Amino acid sequence: MALVRDAVADVLRNTSLVPVAARSIVTTLPSSAGGEVGSLDVVAGHDLLRYLAVGLRVFSSAPQPALLEELHRCLTGGQGFKPANRVLTVTSDHHVVTAQETAHAMLRGLFKPTDCIRVVTAVSELARNIYLYAQTGEVRLTMAEEPDWSLLFQVVAQDRGPGIPNLDEILSGSYRSKTGLGKGLLGARTLLDGLDIKTGPGGTTIKGFKKSRPPDLSRNP
Amino acid sequence: MTAVNQKERLERVIDALARATCQDYSHRVPVQDVDDELLELEVGVNMLLEDLERVSRQNAESLGEIERKNREIAERSALALRELATPIIVVWRGVLTLPVIGAVDTERSADMMDALLNKVVAEQATHVVIDLTGISVLDTRTADHFVRMAKAVRLLGASCYITGISPAIAQTLAQLSVDTSSARTVQKLSDALREVFHELGVVVRSSAA
Image (cartoon, rainbow over all chains, first blue to last red; front, side, top):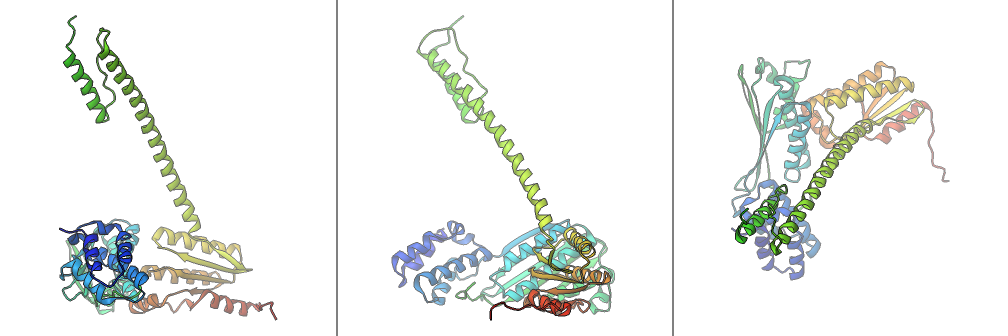
C-alpha cells in the first residue's frame, strides 16, 4: 500500500503546479502523511486536506477546489475516509471537560462553527448527566464520512446507573428539575438532529447524531 | 587448576558483552591467573563494564531526579494556574471584572464564586462584570452557574453584567432554553463598562482635541 505522502506527490506532479512548489508542499506535510493511504481517519484526513489547501493557496494563489477533490478521491479511493472513533470513560467532573475538548477536536473544521458549538454542548450535557446521575459511564464519539462526502457525527452515552424514571415528563418539557437533568437532556435533543434514549433500572443508553454537508475544502479553515 | 582453553575464555567475554548489550552491566568476565594477551582483554572488558555500570546507575538516578522535578513543576504550575484562573480586576473604585477563560469544572466554578463574592465584599463593589469571551462551550449547568453567580452578586447589593457571549453560544443557549433573564447581558466588556461609568457619573473622554 502506498504512503500518503507519495500519493499526494503523484497527484501534484500531474498538475500545472511548478515542481518546486509541489515538492515544498509534499516535504512539509504533517506527520500523518507518513502513514499508509488507508490509515487516515476522517478527522486526520480532513486535517491533511486543510493543510494541503493552505499549501495550494500559498504556492498557486488561487484556491483549487477541483484539485483538492482529486486529492480527497485519491486518499480515500472515493469511498470517504474511515470513521474516527474516540471512547471516553466518565468518572469525574473533569472528564466532562475532556469530552468537550475531544468532541471539539473532532468537529473543528468539519462542521460549521455554530454547529460545532451545538454538538459540543450536547456531548457535554450527556457526559455531565452520566457523571451527575450514574457516577460512571462511557461516551463514544464517532465521525464518519458518507459516500456522498457528507459527515455524520454520532455520540453514544452509556451508563449502568439507576435509569431515568420520568423520561416522558422530561421530554415533554413539563419537568422542572432542581439539578438540571431535564434541561440538559431536552437541550441535547434540540441541539442534535436526533436523540434515541433507552433507559431502565439497569442503566441508560443515549444515542444522538448530527449530520453536516461536506466541508468546503477550498474555504479558509 | 586446569586452565580453561582460549575458546572458552573468548566465549565468556562475548557472553559478558552480550549481557551488557541487554543493559545488564553487573556481570563480569571471570579472570584466570594466567598472564597472557587474553587477560588484558578480559580485564579491559571488566573495567569497561565497571564504568558502564556506574554511568547507568548515575543516569537512572538523574532520570529519577528529573522526573521528580517535572512532577513538582507540574504541580506548582497547576496550583499557579488555579490562582490565575480567577483573576478579579478592580477596574475602578467599586467596579470589578472577572474574565473567565477556558473550561469551567465544578471545582473551578466553586472557587470562582467564592473569590468573586469575597472580593465584592472586600472592595465594597457596586458593579461586577463577568466576561465570557474566553469560553468556547457553555452547557446548561455552566450557564446556570453564571446565572447563579450573577444572582448572588446582586444579593450582595451590586449590579452584575454578563458580557462576551459569542453568536454561536447565544444560539446554543437559546436552543437550550437557559433562562438568563435574571442576569444583565451586554455584548462587550467595553459596553458594560460604558454603562457602569455612566451610572457612576464618571466621564471618560479622549485627551486629544
